[in-house]
Length: 326
Length: 230
Image (cartoon, each protein chain N blue to C red):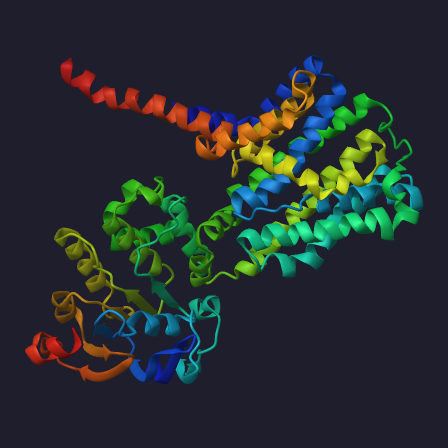
């Protein structure tokens, strides 16, 4: 029953996800819905490293910021074409991943987390001080793009449907990647990298690919955020905000595409609505974190799946007994 | 000679664990390494597999000097290492565990599964279960079966029967006997009944040296031998 439900869910997941966001939009507003979807793309990118490969990064805002700035700068200095700017943003994320990857992916544990944080801090300094004449420093800068065919991104409806399509494409891509041998390798590396090497795999190359995919998708999310907000500030590259994606990943359940989506939406709901009722809402987030760490390590999605499994198991176990009694 | 270890010395920091040790194995041979805990048996296997690099001496496989190579490069030559602690990838399914080995060996998944089933027929019923749910014996047989995917040339197995029930040991022995002649086996083992049943030759290790080589497996049961090496 559970397996057939999950198989059905997997078969039509992109339609279900699209349907849920379309249903959510009238309730939470279109602006928020766009924000939620783009954030989910960022969580998916992050989860590829954290959930699947077991590498916790404290500086993933760097890659989001690279995309955000590359997108805006491309619009300001190169071309008003938003699609070209998106391509440049994704390529910038990939290039940064390619340059930093050889240093970062060799590390694990606290070292991996902190080295990302260190590079994120450097990125913040570059955007805020060193490149301030071009980036606008702390003031930030506006992003203006031309209308291309039917794509007038000054209209929120266009941004909404475009973000929805982008989210679905990213979900499909991440699902394909994690469902393939590449995904098995990532999970193998998470569990024991040495053993994967003994099977004959070059784990460095696998980790590099995962890292570059993650940085590119994060940069893509950064560019989409700018498409929605039409301006960039240093808050898009602020390492302090890396905690948002970590929370989202933990809330939903790391190592699952659906968990990342659930986590992304849950985190955004909390951060958007809770401040209306609780002034120091971050305290609540801290309590949620403690609860997750001590009681629900698998996150909301992981808990739902295991609860369904528990519910299903006794039902299956009771079958032979009923047959005997008959 | 398929495998030749020539006077290797290995250190853990400043501690010398192997001291000018040599051993060899011909194609199809079953060679055992016995000795007390801390004698350097596992270090020997790890050095052959490329996990440790010798400070002196060479490891040669099929005429190629492989000492100093990375483990993945060694594995690509057809050298497989079955670890002592029976650690499969617990979060992956049995099928995924086999898939990892299949792709690395350039073998189709169904062929790889057939190969593992040949070694351990019962595994067929667990293919979609998480490998973490298998018992110690089932894990060991999965590891041995997985190591045989893609026709390896040398199998290094560390204590294959350690901590297993008698019935499971018999299954492991059956699997090893099935592989005899097809692949060269270098096995670290403390169970002397297993050693005398399977061995073509035995190396006795003591404190990082190999002071004795027994070409008659029955000699391992000899009292003097037992007292000296085990």
